[in-house]
Image (tube, rainbow, N blue to C red; front, side, top):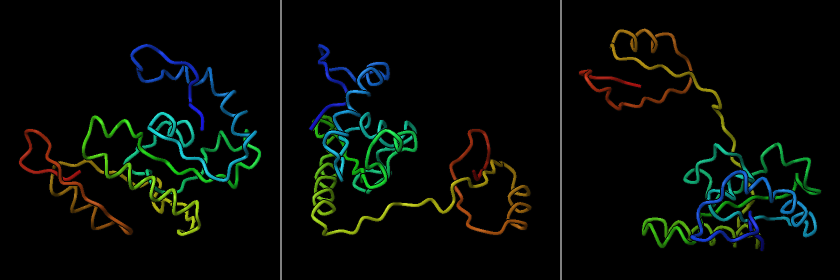
Length: 166
């Protein structure tokens, strides 16, 4: 067990990316010494360090993930390390809705580690979908008439428009 940053700051604020980068080399050495098969990063900062800054905890928690590409060259067994993202337990103190998610994350981690669940990494079948923002029905009709493939429609309204699909 280790931390992303190694020093305590009064008031326990979120770590800055400067602090995280300052400690990254030590964290890498610690992980390489242990050569783990599984890593459970706890909380959004740790999860983003392992998976990338654009990661949304709601999308990845409790699901096996691969290391972000930039880390593949720094860990000895990088291709076999399984990342099992988890919400930080302290999040449950501030948000009652997160408590069952935290329990779920640790339950899932135990099942993966003990071989009770198969390790299957998620894939994105549509990594760069086309996006159309329209506020006139004829634009959407024209687009639908020529489009082949998977289509998802988000029907949030645009202020001042009678209707809109985005």
